[in-house]
Length: 210
Image 1 (cartoon, rainbow, N blue to C red):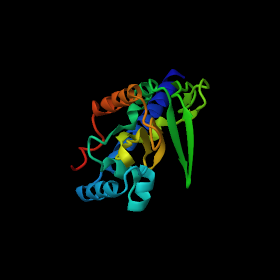
Image 2 (cartoon, helix red, strand yellow):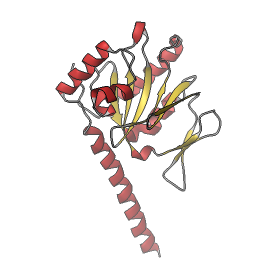
Image 3 (tube, one colour):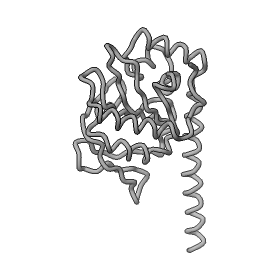
Image 4 (tube, helix red, strand yellow):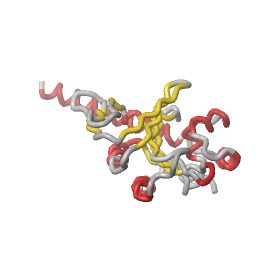
């Protein structure tokens, strides 16, 4: 029985590590080429404030490629395995606007970032029922995480964190600002801390073209 349990554990670990490795490899497959980065940056010069999901459709590019093609001061990405560290840093925000994409639909939920706890019985990470936003996530399937400070309209800078799956599509995003009044300096500083944390880790891509 002990030996069988050990074999089963080895199989589970191998599958889990295989999923993580596959997600990491998938993330690098969406790094923008110099030509794609030039297209992305030209698009944002003409269309400031556009959410990456819309930019991706108009450019006919995967969304992860779009954010990887922005200049380094506007977008930086790391592997999805860093989820818990990034989520923990986001918990310092007073509140976030969560953008949840499903097909052609976009849900917006304003909520503090709740406590995330990995399940002991499944692959889900559970968001505690302490805030309006609650749910069950699968961060083991996230290929990359990008912190973005997008070129905006009239000086507004949408700042947020986007989570991408192995297909290069965003699972959801969390923004501290968009087209409304700018957030207070204290909240911008908290976002900057998250972006600095992302920049301190090994990037998914070698860096977008300038």
